[in-house]
Image 1: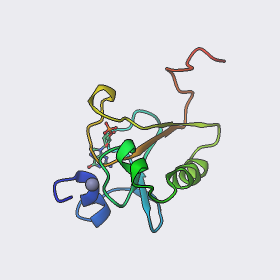
Image 2: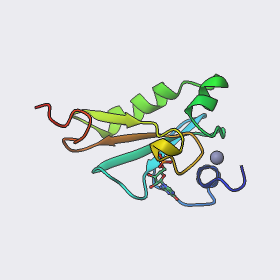
Image 3: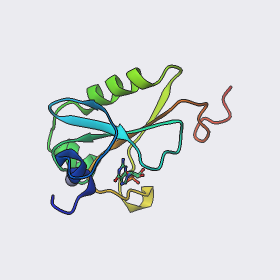
Image 4: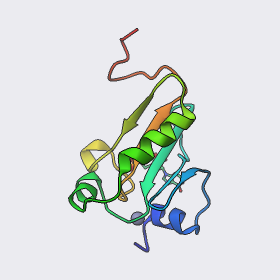
Length: 112
Ligand code: 5GP
Ligand code: ZN
């Protein structure tokens, strides 16, 4: 999609710090990290969100996410798909956030 920021990153028109890439996916550091490690994993084919991606039966997203996360985190990681406006999705090209590198708060923040 011509006006999609992630499609521009995939095309190399906008620079990014790529940490993983294969035929179907690219992973790069988020420009506004909310954890010491904050990577977004993005399918190269444009689908606007997770539901659209799933409906189109694309290549194995979970493999790309777990491979990237395993490489860059040691004590665990969290994967988030913001889907739709109530969830705060701002880039409408499906992507997974990988957060790691510290004890993450929220959701299970009380667990020791
Ligand atoms: P969303 O809110 O849609 O789940 O997440 C979009 C993410 O993309 C945000 O965390 C935002 O910081 C990141 N982002 C937006 N534009 C760019 C960019 O040009 N480069 C990089 N590396 N990340 C971006
Ligand atoms: Zn796109």
